[in-house]
Image (tube, rainbow, N blue to C red; front, side, top):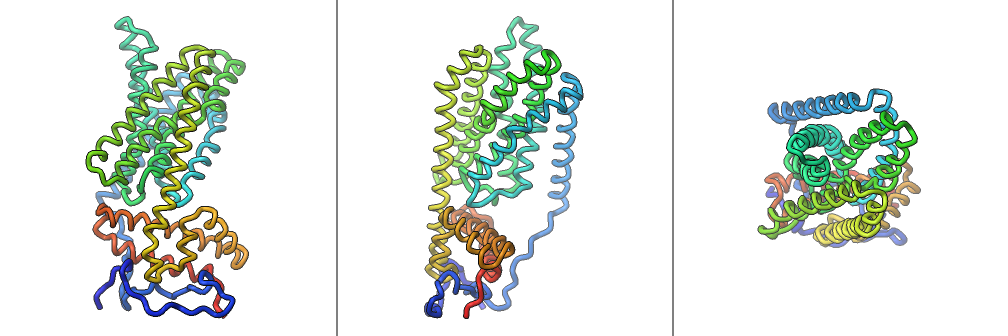
Length: 408
């Protein structure tokens, strides 16, 4: 039997619901409509030997970079100061990560990739930056230059380049998980969180060793309280550029957007470093006049990008509603964060935690289906896109049966 595209498959007459039963609670097909009988869903392929070796090598490399970074920091601060500094540096990590997760609510990124971005920022990016920045300081001192040149000119370029490589790596190894601007901001933010944590450990540890806890409080307030979003914000500019390149159809913009994003990241970082070496009054003047407006601008940009994701989900899932794969109420729910929240609460009331978990997974698969459809429309989907589409639809059908009450 020839296989039909679920986006254009024809359905039978509309289903009639019992009186008092809504379309949402009554729609519970056992399998996706249009799925040919006997059609075997694709089985996830096991990683090939070369890919598996690459994953192992990447993991070992991250661990090695992390250990070398710890050694370099403890040599400058001592183990006790480094441990105390790590406890203080961990304070802003949770709220910053929480903000990133709040932004990424339509389709949460895989925890493994988020951890990879953070580990890259904490290990690889910090190690390379420590080595290159230290070498630049020594070179400038021998040539008669000052340390300020490294802080303002060299450090922003090195640090934003090494952090941006985390986004490039994720895009290369898991293209399917990278759908646009919001994903770019989230992965960039995680790389920035990892980098900022380790850098804060270094600065706080150095201060503890040289001035004691009195001077440490000032560094803690400056780096962990006043500006916890600094590094995530800088790298987010590159993430925006890469996200635009991934989602646009403009061939000229694809190579330019990441470059422009990286230039903005370096410029923002350089301005921050200039203000940091300008004394207390200079820092707070720049903070109020420049850094706070830029931060608010990024917040607005991120919220607009997230709202665009909701519209994209509604637009691309509409074809599944018109052909009967989704109920109209499901379509409206999947494109609205408030309705998603209400649906999870409803599932909790009617079926308990298991139904709520099924509803949450149903929503995640709905977002994944919409982004897959977007790639198919733009012509950038993988060769097995239709197999993915069938698998997602089958998964949504199975989940629907877990959270819908039986129809009388």
